[in-house]
Image (cartoon, rainbow, N blue to C red):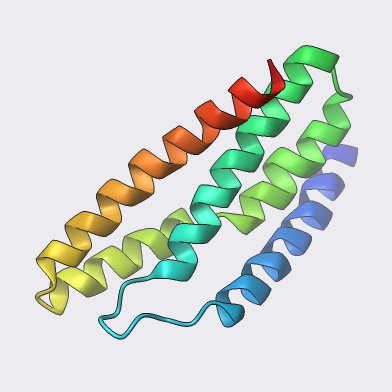
Length: 120
């Protein structure tokens, strides 16, 4: 039951952080969803950092649950990514949609790799 509470608290915090960042990042004129891309890449970096730290130092599982599933789960936005991709496609902005999909995937994976390398 404690893990459910930790995820709820962390999720609320992550969602608020995502909202704050999303209103601070100015949308591009062509409709490219820069805020979501930045949030997801930063979230990928942080989740990679947390997992590497946990493996290296044996962090308490409740702390990892709070931060990884709660905060970072509430912070990152795969559903928003999907919606924004479809919006670009429906707006006949295929090149931007493709760029957004590739950047989101590649940069997020690179962010996790970098965070692991930094901890090793």
